[in-house]
Length: 377
Image: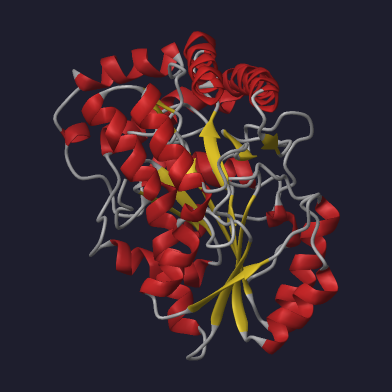
């Protein structure tokens, strides 16, 4: 199969959407959103015309206030520190655009290898170089080398997620403290991607907003937290000046996020303990699925990294395969199961694939059986 241009996540997931199969390629949850949220949405649809028109550019006021209040226990925030946008992807794009305006020419963006696909692409689109910083087999970082790299390569933004995508690493407080120190020492932004923060398997995710670092930008969304990836409601938290700049750009890019969905989320969160009961169920299902799928893949000959949280397994393909794209292509053609080749995330990870595990168990069981049968033949 000829390698396509663009995102391999989109490519392999679109094969399923067009031709059928099981989509383990895209981070789409197989779980239903909270029923209470859907009931609120149904009620709002018939409530009146205004809810179907443009929302305020910075976000629905009730939802803005709720987000600011939720994080005020971590640091002092007001709605002026929050911007609601069309998913975390737009939040990340706006952040990269603003950072590019504030750093010298030939500055670099750094993330940890393998990073999520958007990180290097958004750096490139904004005229910034990108550094893939290595982690060892235990996902540990040499912080002395990181400090040296940031200094010598003029790194002016560090992007990381916790849990990470694709490896599922949750960053310890002590690790984030060292990154925060490097940020302040070298005047380097931290772009913290928190979209999977609610899907931890054992230990909760430390929130770096506690550091009150003016160079920290916090990016999140309700897509994964509430299993509503198609609603496209995300937000970004940062210094008021930075948020003001992003809002000005947002007026000409996304303009506003869907008002109906913003209002439904705000009403749901206010009535349901900010979604904590639902996310507790989501964590349990995801953790159980990760254990199940890892055991099946190891039996099939994969070498799997143990995820701390998130949606995915990161696995080295078994013999006789040595190339993730070759494996993913052959697997889909033979079985209809779609996975993502590791090269989509890093040019040095061609022997890996990423698999989504947040689907209903019968679907995962079928996918695992198909993968095992494929490798036996």
